[in-house]
Structures are given as structure tokens and as C-alpha cells.
Length: 268
Image (cartoon, rainbow, N blue to C red):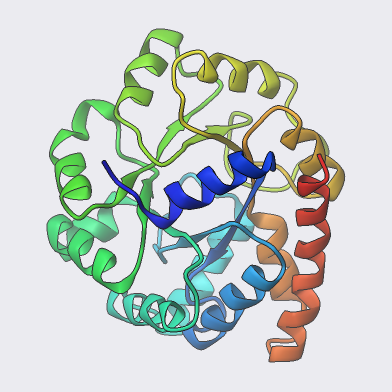
């Protein structure tokens, strides 16, 4: 039975009767030094958990904003080893829960087992592997679990209910509910079927359910928090930090935007 920072944070949220806020950023965008500062700013803003995108050249589940973030990180020289060092530096100053948002190619190129062990040693709590289908996940799950990391699974609007039941059985930490079909990116409204999808997932698991993809405003975040256990915001945060000056002061200003969204979620 795991008792990671993720487990502890969700347990504390449940006890307090509060919803969680999960922020996505691309590791290494615009630099690994900036990433350390950004995570600390996000924690100060009240974020409960950070998803760090491992830079990858072909992130198929991502929209333009997060693709561009990965491109900038790679152009800035971000490597797997560099990202591990970045996480270790964050851990010297913070115990905020962190998971990697990653693609199999990056992990297999490193050696999947080795990648899990190095990530755990650096201070990561789990993995959300975007392109790891359930039918092929067995050997990978063994390595994830062996490193005492969470295997975060995705449920989408097109996931049949029988398949959903099987997927959530193999999950721990929390379940990531994709609110709409398609890739990441800010949308004008929350998808019509998101509330029903979260309710259906909750019929088959006691794990917290986080809703993501397309949430970009405080109003949308507050709405999502009325029926999910946590809200994930990515592209809107990536955009905000990219648009502000890449200085400590600029990141502090961008974090104020995040703090407003956190307050909207916590007020539900």
C-alpha cells in the first residue's frame, strides 16, 4: 500500500472537504532553472499537485500550446538527466506532490525500468503515460509499481464502460478524466458530457477523479470542481507563464493568475 505525497494530499483535501487543483507545466520551458522557480511559485499560489511534462518531440495528445512548450524545452537543451536534476532541486525546497506527464518513447529510450528508478530517486510520485494502452501496460506497470510510483490512468469520453471498469482497477493515486475528445488546449466551455463521465467513473472506483483538458478560466475551474475531486489546468497556465517576462518577477505575476483559479476551486 503506497503512502505517497499524492495519497497524503488527497486524504488531507478529503478531510478538509476541499477540491484539489492540479497544474501542468512543461519541464524545461523556458529553462530548467525557471522550472524550479515556477513550481515553487505554483505551490505558493495554492496548487496541490504539479504535472511536469517530460519534453518530447512528438506529443500527440497535446494541442499547440503544450507542443510549443515541449519544443522550447528541447531547444533550450532539456534532457532526461537535466529534468531529474530539476526535480531533485525542487525537492530540496518543497514536498509538493509531482507526477510526470510523459510518452512511452522517452521512457523506453532511457530504459523503462531505469527511468522509473531514476524518477523515484529524484522525487517524483507517479506517471501519467499518455500512449500506454491497457493491453500493453502490464510489464510497464510492474516497473512503475516496483519504484513505488503511482500509475495514473486516463478515462476519455469514448472509453466504453466495460473497459473503464478494467482500466480503473489498475490505477492508483487518482484517475485522470479527459473532459472532451481531442487534444489539450483551452476551450470556451466545459464539455457537455463531462459531469456524467465523472459520475460514471465514480461508480467503479473509490480513487479521486480529476477533470482536465480544456479548462482555462476561473469560472470553468469552479464549475468542474462542483462534480470532480480535482481540476487540472494546463495550457492556460503554460500560456500565462510564457507570456510574462521570464524573470522571477514575471513568474510571480503569472502565479497570481493561477492563485485566482485556485481560489475559485477551493471556494466550491
